[in-house]
Length: 314
Image 1 (cartoon, rainbow, N blue to C red):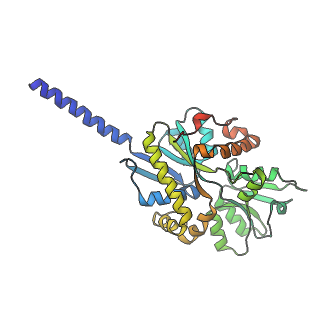
Image 2 (tube, rainbow, N blue to C red; image 1 turned 180 degrees about the vertical axis):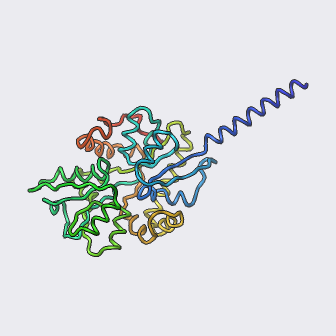
């Protein structure tokens, strides 16, 4: 009897420890970059709905370096990131993530104090870009390469979108690339800015509604039930950003986002936040990645992602 009790006690202890370990493994860590990608999940972040009884933490970061580090170290279970960054790292074969959904479809604009309305108006001009060899650079230069200029525009790079805005403020008649929400901030600080919507230019060039700029990558060891419920919550969050940007801006302010509420209220509608699953995004993604292959194939390691890149979903 004593031996049976000891056996029962030992088995119970093992099961309890296993359950505790399982709970630890199911605590999610989520990372999103500040700006439009984080705004796509702001409603979720603020309201904190349940995910199959799993606890989670959300880190909002600045720039691409923390995202790359998270992929490589596998420190986070879910990462919002530029689609080409994820594709590049996953193509190494050492990064165990899959692309699950697109949440932002372009937030880039050419801006100047001089009258510019179409790409024809930048003929022979210098354009200040940020994000060399990243999405801002890829989209802008792809569009410029398709245009027939008398005198090709020249390119100057700066280290960030904030530096591009500073250039616009200090250099008369500068033409710079800005992204939301920084564009809305610039329009509050400066009068009579002229803006070219690069998303509209992309539609005219490709016939596609938009380009899949950033999306959600999930660790391939995550249980499908957790991923599917999480994606449903993010789809709702994206819907709220579009239906009630004032409310989402209020939530972002409460969460100490980098931009004030009145700026975010204007930026959200121009951030092209929309939810599409990986499979729904694939055609648009391959159009975008095809442009990257023409621009600099090394940015996605010289090939389109294969089927395993895409989270299958329902």
